[in-house]
Image (cartoon, rainbow, N blue to C red; front, side):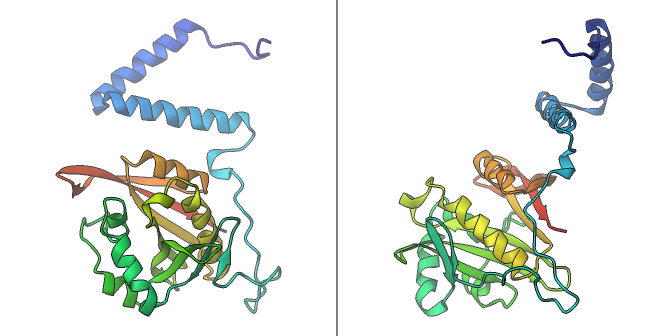
Amino acid sequence: MENSKQRIPETTLEALARNFFKETSAYGFQQVDYVRFVNYILDRAMGRQDGIGIQEKKLPVIPKKTKKGVLKSSQPPQLPLTGKNIKIRAFHREQDKSLLEKWVVDEYGRYFLLSLTTAKEINLDHLIENDFHIIGIITLHDDTPIGAMAYLNYDVMQFKAELRKLIGEPDMRGRGYGKEATHLWIGYGTETLDLKKIYLNTLDTNIRNVRLNEELGFRVEGILRNEVFVDGEYKDVLRMGLWRE
């Protein structure tokens, strides 16, 4: 069925495209930039068709607080957190440090300790002992530990923290546990820790991770070009954030 609105003539579109190409070529656009730009345009166009802007999409509602700071709705979750397939319990240094030591040594796990803004590795002891770092251990329902979640640099004045996640057991990856754990951890951060802003950094090459974060409500806030030198090459870092009113 034809759209009731008159379509833009092909000649007009071509003229606009030529002008745009001329301007962006002078600016320094590369082929990949045109692809990214088209994606931005499509996102916004689809947002308007749906009646909502990209920045206006509804996010999970966080219970409001009274003047005394008490939640009006149900009591916020404390650790452990329980999901359909997993749980997240509190981190216990004596029994759990060896788990982290084992998990962070492989190709996947090392990013849990790597600062993607400095390319420097965080000391595990410092990660554990820092009072502004909060760690949880992901387990199956039979209490088998499979990974960890963390909030780094928990800022009680600015109500923000950096989220990190790790499925440490290789045979447990790719099963959706990371997404479920992140969803639980976000709820813990917003409802119990009263976080307004949760942010994370990820390599632009990790498209699967970016997509997972977007499904959970995160949005790319910025791109740090050639920010870190990892595995013999410079890589871009995406800063992603999730905001709650």
